[in-house]
Amino acid sequence: MNLSLYLLTVLIWGTTWIALKLQLGVVAIPVSIAYRFALAGLVLFAILLLTRRLQAMDRRGHLICLAQGLCLFCVNFMCFLTASQWIASGLIAVVFSTATLWNALNARLFFGQKIAGNVLGGGAMGLVGLGLLFWPELSHHAASRETLYGLGLALLGTLCFSAGNMLSSMQQKAGLKPMTTNAWGMLYGAGMLVLYCLFSGIPFAMDWSARYLGSLMYLVIPGSVIGFTAYLTLVGRMGPERAAYCTVLFPLVALNVSAYAEGYQWTPPALLGLLAVMAGNVLVFRKPRMPMPALGAQR
Image 1 (cartoon, rainbow, N blue to C red):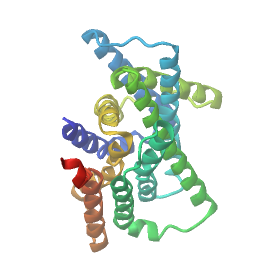
Image 2: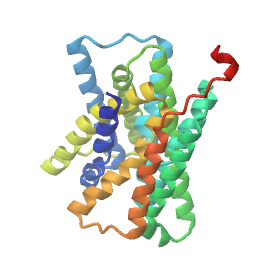
Image 3: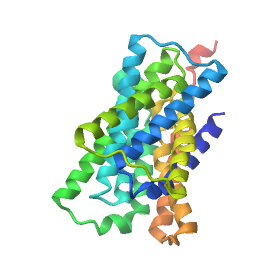
């Protein structure tokens, strides 16, 4: 089950970049994000009500959902999309892949979980692999104030993503399922984006073209309803540090799709990076060896 959820998350989130590209145009980015999560939240509520699986939450649960909505469904998307105006998408992918390391550190800080050496080693290997994959893009990126702004926003978005992982883990430890907390969190996140747009004077335009509506529906159903539910279920089952290795594999799927759809050419450094990413994946999910019992304990 965990493997199925893991592969499903990687495949879905590795292809959402196509839909995100199709969203650009008439509708402002914050408005598109608000549309996405408002619709996704309503779809989740409809599913939960029809199946009678909507869980009751107390005030604490709603406050955590509010914080989760701010981190996972609002600020991090705004950070990454704004950063993309100043730095290359490959650099954003490399920064985002540090989520594995941040989740391991935050799990230690908030839950007292021991930091597994194989998780840190695998995360670092994946980070190096992504650096090799995007090396042509990164090597031509000039250092400037805008670059620093972009890097700062990408890092802030990654930290918000990690914080959202921790909040979801807290909710699951309290017995709340990701579908219920995601439904509330997505509506809270969309509501905060709507308020931001109102105060900023951003118009709520709508693009009724098949291109925009089709990409929006892909982001709503597979990208949000299925993707976030599968990923956060993994966070509860596997731990946030292992689940976050998905962030290293998303760009790998995206590059393979790009090779088919846009003629991306694999280079020797990119292939070496591919091997490093896959080796890191194996390392992250390797089960630690059980310590050998002392001779005296075998009596």
